Length: 119
Ligand code: HEC
Image 1: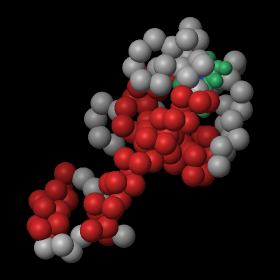
Image 2 (image 1 turned 90 degrees about the horizontal axis):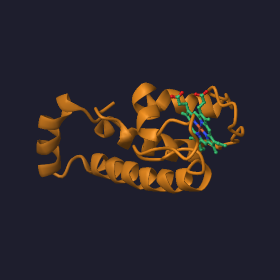
Image 3 (image 1 turned 90 degrees about the vertical axis):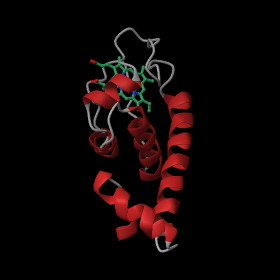
Image 4 (image 1 turned 30 degrees about the horizontal axis):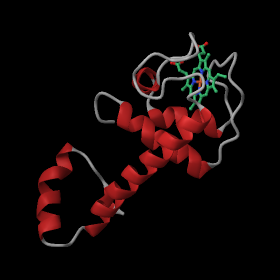
């Protein structure tokens, strides 16, 4: 999966590799990430939007940060781990969500799209 590595350093080589048709996995991984993020947004709408604004607006629950704020405060992958372990990340009013790994990946993919900087 070396072709799926994505970052500024890879950009130059990437254009070349795509031109050569040698790195289709990268295209594929990016499409997958976008698809995951779309599905994650739907999950967030279903499970989280009653308390959290799932973009960067004002949350319905006065104590719940918007997801854009949460995503910028914590690395989404870290949040994903916390959910995987069933940790309540300081959620007094929040039910414990039993999330399976595919759903956690969807949610963290979505949270990554909300971060101001890549990462
Ligand atoms: C019943 C209301 C409720 C629901 C539903 C809910 N949350 Fe929360 N969430 C909260 C509250 C309230 C806080 C703030 C807790 C605090 O700061 O003490 C919080 C905090 C968080 C934080 C930590 C943010 C931070 O900056 O500390 C994350 C991440 C989070 N929620 C993710 C989620 C996700 C993902 C979902 C859906 C799967 C979800 N929440 C659903 C009420 C809710």
